[in-house]
Image 1 (spheres, rainbow, N blue to C red):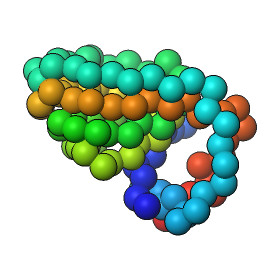
Image 2: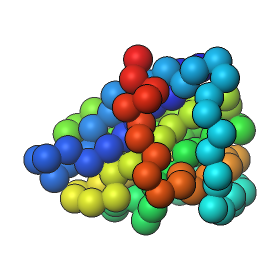
Image 3: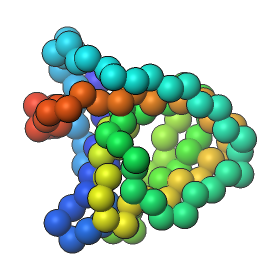
Image 4: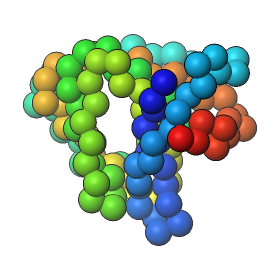
Length: 116
């Protein structure tokens, strides 16, 4: 299963890379789960993620731009590990009404296990 990892680089900017979640992953204890629904047209300027989230996109289209200038769009079925908790962060723009599930990642989770 494909997963995009957005992380903070040593340059203080966020970057994207691709990960591959194993067909049966390890069991992860999720401290919190949050459901969100936002209206198309919503934008957020550069900001770091408040915590490490796994975001499951249920509907709509959201565009994110990293501090390095790269842009990706996420929609239904996409998975994003939002891990840029320091530095400049990223921007978001909802191109349509969006529905998502935010799952806080457990302490000590190593995304290296999901390297593509």
